[in-house]
Structures are given as C-alpha cells and as structure tokens.
Amino acid sequence: MADIKPILIGAVLFLAVVLMWQVATITGFQVTRPSNVTIGATAPTVTTPVCGASITLSACANTTQFCSALVTDLEGHEDVTGVNATFYKDATTVGDGSEIADERYTVACAKGAATNLTTYNYTCSFTTIRYFADTTDTWSARIAATDAGALTGSTTSTDCTTINNLTALDVVETNINFGTQTAGTNTTTFVAEKNKNCGSKYMSVNVKGVDMTCTTGTIPVAWLKYDLTNATAWGSATSLTTGDVNSSLVVIRSQDDLGTNGSTYWAIGIPLTGVKGACNGTITFTAV
Image 1 (cartoon, rainbow, N blue to C red):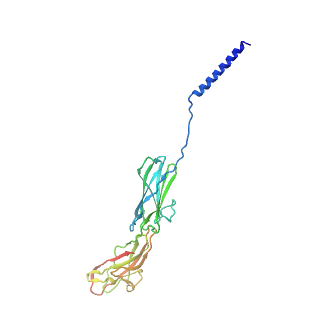
Image 2: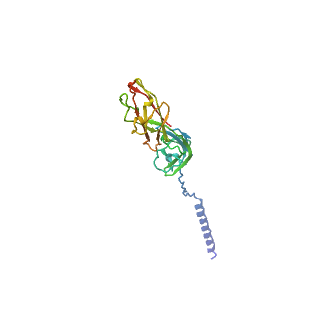
Image 3: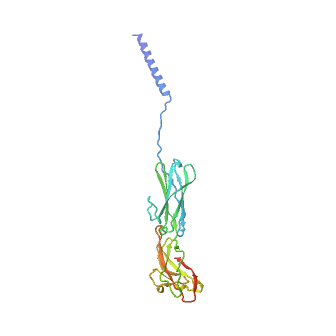
C-alpha cells in the first residue's frame, strides 16, 4: 500500500494539469459570433412649402403658381419615389380626390438641386390656376413625399396665398352686323351679342358707343338700341349713349371650364334721309 499511494497522488496531479491545460486552451482561442441589428425605415420629411404670396389671375386664361420645399430621406434620397403637391382653397378638404376647377389643383413636383446626399429641393408648378378660381378665401399648399417603402411624409403651408379678384369679359362675336337695311326703317330682328365672364366674380356689363359713320352722313348713336331679350320692339329698347351705362346684364362667375355667358340684343334704326352706303361704328362693353 505504501508503494501505491505515491502512484495515486501522481495520477491525480496529472489529471488536474490536463484539465487546467484544456480550460486554458479553450478560453485562449479567438471565438467569433455574429451580431445583428435591424434599422427601421423612416418616412421622408418635407419642409414647409414656400409659395407666391398672391396671385393675379389672367382673363379667360390660366395662371401659374409655384411652390417649393426641401425633401429629406435619411436612407438616401434615391429612396424617394415621388413628390406631389396640392394647392387648395382653405375651406376645401385636401383628400386624394381629383381636381376641382375653382378650388383645388394637384401636380407632380420636379426634383431640383441637392443640398446634401439626403436632401433635394423640389419645385411644384401649378400651371392651370383658372381665371375663375375662388377668391373668397385664402389658399394653402401641401407637399407630400413617398419612398420605396410606401412611407409618406408631408407638410402644409396654411393660408400662404391670396388670389386677387379679377373682373373681365370677352365678347364672343367679332362684330355686330345688321346686314342691309332700307332708309327710314329699323331692324325687326335683334342681333345677339354674347358676353363671357372671364373673371373670378359675378360681373355687370356697361355699354357705350359712337355715331356710325357712313359713306354719306352718319347714324346717331341713339339709333342703336339694346335689350336683354330679343322679343322687344326697336322703339321700346334702350338707346345707346356715348357714356358708360349699365346694361342691367349680370353674368355669374363660372365654376367649371364651360364658362358662363350672358347676352345683350341689338337693333338699329336707319334715318329716312341723309345717309347711304356702308356705315361703321363701335360699341364698347366693359365688365364692372
């Protein structure tokens, strides 16, 4: 037994050394483990739109309004797939509906210069502001940007623009032609002259004229007469004068591209003597 005891002690010491070596070996090696993180997508951001403070409408034509904003996408601006804008009367709900000719306009905006890798300037050109756009309220602009993940960011500039009133007309017929008449008579059929409202509010129409100059003689301006119906007799109609007179014709504001019109009806009397040949004059229509 005395001889075996040293052997056992040696064996135990040997095993302890081996275990310590294994532990040291395991903890001493370089161990690699994967690391993971998910970066959530972020929606684009849009600065407050900058628009023209006032708009002067164009008679029977469209006017352009420009708005702009900076659009930022932290995932890189190539992630932005579209920028759109709405310019609308403040009393109108923006929504995603179609345009309303006198209250809401929508456009796709154009990408401009970059300020850095994530931010670009966008310009939105509203080229179809109608001549009859509603001027009874201020207007606002909303610009929205959408990215590849269908995330959208938008900002609205409220009460940013005032549209000035416009009073204007167009006389549809190019001339008032009474045809060939006989001296000492008057026309029995009135000639219609259509007045189109080319402005943003209801309009009244003033009229005035001058004597008609003939090859021989003149036809006094008062012998040209008008009314709001073609059923009136020449003698009962209103005589034209050289000064502006309200014709009593009122034409409401249009609310669509069809426009609104109103007509005055015209007749002429020919003096019995002192005139012959071709006669020419002018009648002036003024929107008020």
